[in-house]
Length: 141
Image (cartoon, rainbow, N blue to C red; front, side, top):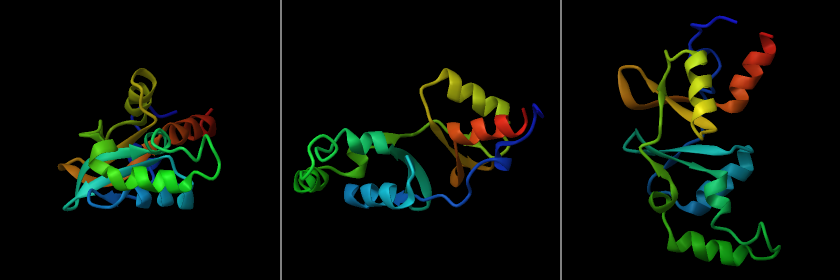
C-alpha cells in the first residue's frame, strides 16, 4: 500500500447532496433511493453540514412500528435539516492521504467525511466512507 496516496483516488465524486432549505422528507427519500448513509448539506454551493441515515432514523417511528409513516412526515414537517444535521462537519481535502483518512475514521466516531477542495474548504468535491477505505485496503492487501 502506498502511504501517500491521496483520498481523491478512492472517494466518491458523484455526491448526492441536499440544500439547507430542502426538507427532511427529501433527505429520507434520497437515502432510500440511492442506498446511502450520509448526505452533505450545502447552502449557496458551500458545504455547511452533513446528515446521516442514523440522524433520520432517530426521528422516525416507522422503523420501530410499521405503518407509522404519517407520524414520520409530521416530525419531518416540524424540523428542518438545520435542526438535525451536524454543522461544520470534519472534512478532509482531496490531497489528504488515505492513511490520514483511515486514522481519522478509526480514532474519531465518523463513518464518512466530506472531501473539499484544497483551495476552498467549503467547496464539496467528494465524500469518503469507511467502506471506501476498507475496500482500498482489501484491494491492496
